[in-house]
Length: 436
Image (cartoon, rainbow, N blue to C red; front, side, top):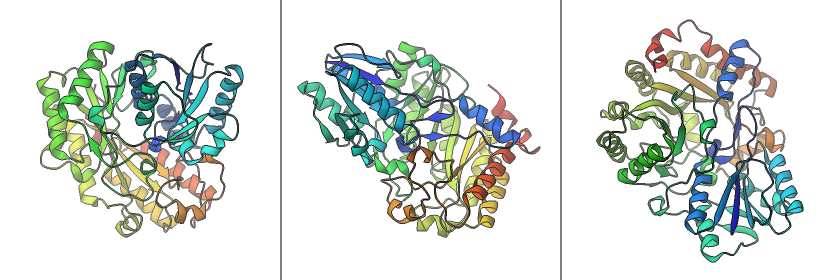
C-alpha cells in the first residue's frame, strides 16, 4: 500500500497534540504581558508520537509512507491518515473531502479522540471512509498485515507499548519542532515512555482515548533516545507521558540508564507528572540525568472541589517545596492551574491566582475549565456549556458558565496569565532557569 500521513497543522499558537489529543490554542490576550506570553507559546510546535508510531508500523509492514502537512497525496495513494482535533476539525474535514474528491481511489482515515467522539461528522459528510476509535496502533497493525482498509468506525484496542516498534520520524519536519522556552536545544522530538494514567480526574481529556497506565522498560526508553540521537542528532526530548513518575522506581531506572548510556550530558529533557510523585531524591536524580523542564498540575487549592471532580488534590506545601527546589536546581518548572471550575466563585479564582504568585515557578499556565466530550464529567458539567462550537473548545475560551460570566472569566484569565510575568518578583528568584 501507499500511505500518506498528514500532520494537518492548525496554525500559530495551536497544538493538536495537547489536551489529550483534542488540541489547544493559546489566545492573544488583551494586556501587554499576556500578549508576550502568547508570542512565546506561538513558537512551541509539538511533534506527534502517534503519527510517528503509525509511520513505523506501516513501514515495517513494507508499505510506502509519505509524510505531508495539508498537501493532497499523490496519485496511487491507497490510504490517507488525518489526525482530528476540536480546534481544527472543520478544516480537517474539508481536507478529507478534497482528498476523496481528487483521489477517488484513496481512502481517508481519521484518528485521535475528536473524530472518535463525533465519527458521523466525518463519515456522513463525505470526508472519511473510516474513523479509528482508540489508540490507533492496533488498527494500523491489522491494516498493515492484511493490506485491507475497512470502512466505518473501527475500534482499536490499547496495546502493550513495549511491543510496538519505535516511532519512525523519517520525513517529518524535525527541524521545525520546538519547546522553547521550556527546552532550548534543537532538534527536539517527543518520546512516550508510558501511556495512560493511573488516576481518575473526571475532567481530564486524556481519559477519552488513552487506556490504563502501561509503561515501557528503562532499557527500551533509553534505546529509543539513543537512536534519536544517532539518526536525527536530537538534543532535546520531551516525554509526553501523562504521568512520567507514576512508578517512581521505573522513573529512577530511566534516569540511571540515561546516565549509564552517556546521554545525560548530550540531551536535555522534560516531562509532566504529579508534584507528589517526586520525593525521595527522585527530582535530584532526574536533574542529574539531564532534565531541565518539568510540568505539573496543581489546578486549585480547594481540595474539596477537586475531590468532587475525581482529582486527588496536591497539598500546598508540596507544590511550594517543589518550586523552591526547582529554582535551586535550575529546573524550569511550569505549574498548571484551572479557572472557572463548577463551584468556583470569582473570589476562589482570585485565590488560585494569588497562590500561583506565592509558588512563583518559572512558568505558570492558567486554563479555563472545559468539559471535553468523552470525559467522565462531560454528562454532568456539560450542562453548563453555552455553545457546541467545538472549535472553541481550546482550553482558553470560555465555552461554559458555572456562575462567572464568560466575559468576566476571560478578563480574569488575562489578569492571571499576563499579570504573572509582569511581577518584579518573578524573574530574579528563577535566575538559574534562564541559564542554558
